[in-house]
Length: 73
Ligand code: TRP
Image 1 (cartoon, rainbow, N blue to C red):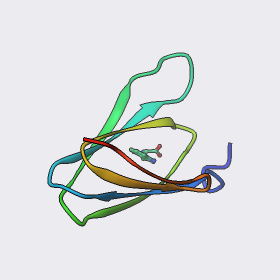
Image 2: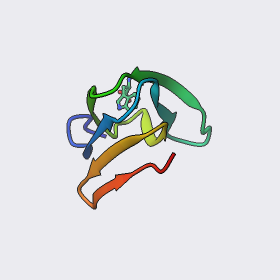
Image 3: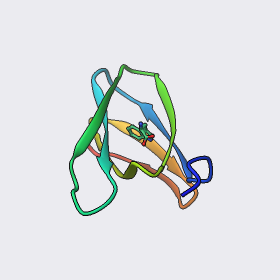
Image 4: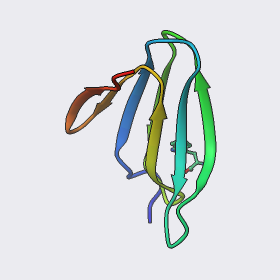
């Protein structure tokens, strides 16, 4: 897979200590990276050969090509 072609998404932290957790692609689904964002910090990332899913923990705004969604806590 061309790693430059994955969809981008944006996470904006609305509180300190938001975790953006990347989950591995393939048979094994496990955490491979956790990025901690503080309030107002923004992470711009892609789905890649290594990352097929992302879990967001904490209060954040998530923007994707499907639209925007906020976590509720
Ligand atoms: N090394 C990871 C990868 O190439 C970096 C990464 C990309 C990532 N997208 C992510 C880490 C989303 C956490 C969440 O797949």
